Image (cartoon, helix red, strand yellow):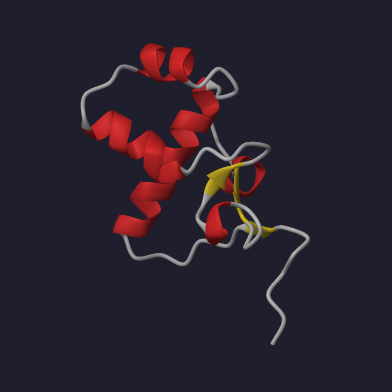
Length: 84
């Protein structure tokens, strides 16, 4: 399964202060990763956050893996781009 992060993860300054979130939600990637780090099963995460999909969880893991490799990760930016 190939996941395109830009289809699943969004960074928008108007949503959760620009933290990476699952598109269409206010669920931050860090919340998913914190749950996984605490040993919470995917099924429990999906039950606790019914708007998530298995693909969203996999995208969060892929996002974290890319960050661990210190790669630049281009994300979609919401309609409220920062003005300079």
